[in-house]
Length: 244
Image 1 (cartoon, helix red, strand yellow):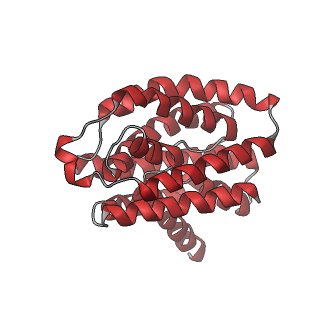
Image 2 (cartoon, one colour; image 1 turned 120 degrees about the horizontal axis):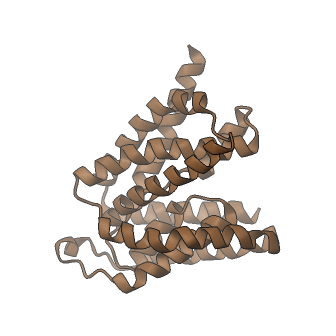
């Protein structure tokens, strides 16, 4: 009984963070699953299946709130998928330490831009979306995801906000939907090679669903400037962790 409660608490915590910031949460799920005793490859595959659950719950909430730009999702994914494949292939030729350093520097830059970019929330109904920059977001997000095996969500939101000039709430909602499709494709691939532990996913699913809903709801309650500052802080913390 205690183990089920702990699974629910863990799933709720991760789902809440994922839903609040429009990220996959893989950087939290993978180490948690490894700590629970899963082999690293199974932890990665199972993490993706967990992200499918949490991102579906949060994406559903964001869609109902009208904060998802489906056209942006479609354009981005067209460029993200091939970029991720290229990134995964190039990984074998690059030093891991170099990859982590470059990624950390990018996170620090995006954190600075997120914290200092002027608020666009007052013009949500008259957004001037920079569609020409969406392919850049797709390529960067997909390429780095393929290189480092991370969720693109950690890059989607700041890149949407900084390059495409989408208000932060729309950036979070749109990222949640994009992550769902990306994680679904990844889960299928890992499932085919036996790297998804269905039992673990089902144990965490109730908490992930509740957390995803609560996090997404919180994203529409909190002031946009607070969301931006918290997201910037999270980027800095992840960047520092990558360097250590």
